[in-house]
Length: 519
Image 1 (cartoon, rainbow, N blue to C red):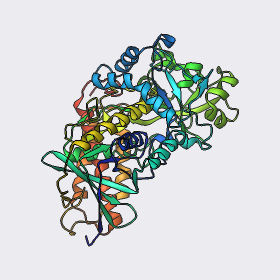
Image 2: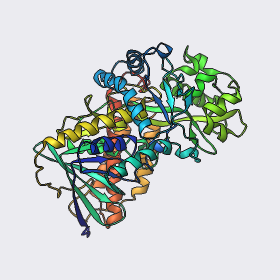
Image 3: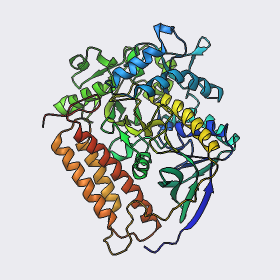
Image 4: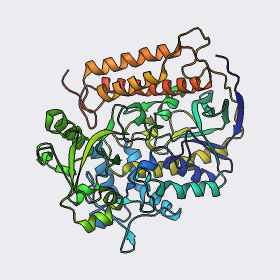
């Protein structure tokens, strides 16, 4: 490899990796405590990643006693959905802080749907009370980027606070000295530059891993980078076998992630025969949790009761038009008079992630994780609305704690940044690989063998294939900067795919979103 990149060195009190809701909230809170906050992102801050693609639903108890609700009930619902393997400390911190996070978003200019002067609260599958809030995205035209209503006000605050934003950088390493964070390193995606950040506090807020799967609801640039960075730094992961598949993605046009909230207002699922089949899968019918609903849809399709497009029907006939136009304005406009659309399950969310405590701290001093990058809150399955609230809550908490830590650190040791990059060997004698084809193959393997329904033989095959690709990649020839970027990104994806498949292989029993067939 004959590359001589420019090295760019940057000092920061706190470095946030990721430009979605968790990253932006981290940056805002950190910048209120320390001056030199840097946010680095692979795409554009607030305009890439998964937050902008969300349906804008958030769950929080705003008022004790409303609809019989309480923080304790939110904890109970979250733990029930998670099959009691949640990090209970995280759940309690989350439920207690959710109201503060929502109020913070409102103060920052994020609009919410209102009713009689208060935030509109609705029911949602898995929630025992009405605590489902919705960001008002009516001003955003594209159904694919409704989350901009949530992120753009936060970007404005980040700019106002003087946070330095570095865009278009693929982060490859968290750097340590004597088991403490001293910085991080990344590759510029446009120019031959290596970015080296010197800092005592790094927050991983890189989102999930939808890009590791063939069909997902995620943005294409969300490829599990935070998990790979944590693994390489030596931080622990947890619950990686629990991958949530969204039960209902509209096949389009336009293709869009369907909110589960309309089920509370009367929407139902039907197979090609018109049968309301959820009666066979759960006493809660369409108010069942997402894992149950996704498997039901998967089973109906696999049993030949799906449509020609390999999907099922989501029927809105029972919902009055005035309710649809008021509560689901973006969906209503996309339906264009239709009352039935075709939907199918797709990889949606990672319940697992980097193991953290209630402050977002990992087991490496100075390394934090927030949002979907962190694991522990959801356990084996996630409730609708908890994800965005999690990003806001723990982005806020991690940003504050990381900044307070930075204030206590008097000096950061010199960053050692000459270690090999992901998938980079020391020579150029290996063969040249078709990285694009390997990426497609891995995503298909994950979508087929590490998907909704799993078995031991297929999981073992997936692990074996991924390990073999890693060996090939490590020993391959890298000819230029673009190939180096592709190799590093693919190696990170392979690390994440392997972590998911191995965790699924180790858990023999079915639990939550992890469903094992008899071997």
